[in-house]
Length: 320
View 1 (cartoon, rainbow, N blue to C red):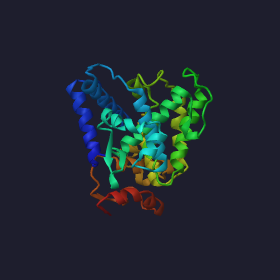
View 2 (view 1 turned 120 degrees about the horizontal axis):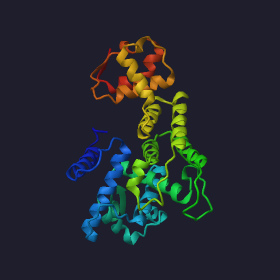
View 3 (view 1 turned 180 degrees about the vertical axis):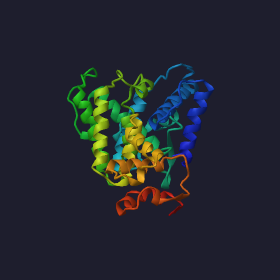
């Protein structure tokens, strides 16, 4: 992510603001980073347009939900550029679209396409993916609607009780939908959605949530389900994303196990399970050390090992 210009801008914006105001602990996950970004720009909008300077964000709930709905609907369709009909479908009044652009100048922008038709887009796909995740998460927590399973509760009561079982089903269905996507267009969205399940991130969304909802039991079951999917051996790319998902959930057990083997030097002699192979690839790809020359012999001499390490070979400048 650090090689992507827009993420450098996001990181600089968030970290500058937090350091300047001596905020709490620095964000450690992608969800934390993007949550702080949206909170920052919401506060900035309040100060600029409403003349308010507050310690807590004053959300324009309607605009966030409308943008989130647009983001989710178009993400599922694979669209990065939107037209007036798309905005209407999301409940956005086209005549007031410029207001949305003004409220979230850094998150959503309006441009003129061919023949002067107005087209709309988010500054970056990752912004669209984050707002889509916020919308799906709020729909479930506030309205008991599982958009990932295409199930909708008939209840309109925001205080409807959400059971432990329904929460696990919600996150499992999101994992399944992301893995079923051939293009991987829901991978980053899934990371954000799972990250929002943690109360540490939910506290920044006060004003949008009716209440924070976090359960250690549902969290543990979601982690177990993701590990099960890793063991079932999806494609290397999907396995790596599932490890990113575990990172968003603050579970590092598989990664720490592999790191321990790397430190002891016993890895090349061990017979690794599919989950351990995936963990090794994740550790190597996310290492701070640049992969100039990757020595395959240090990790495996078997054909299976070579195939498993292919993503690392592709990311390296040379392999031995």
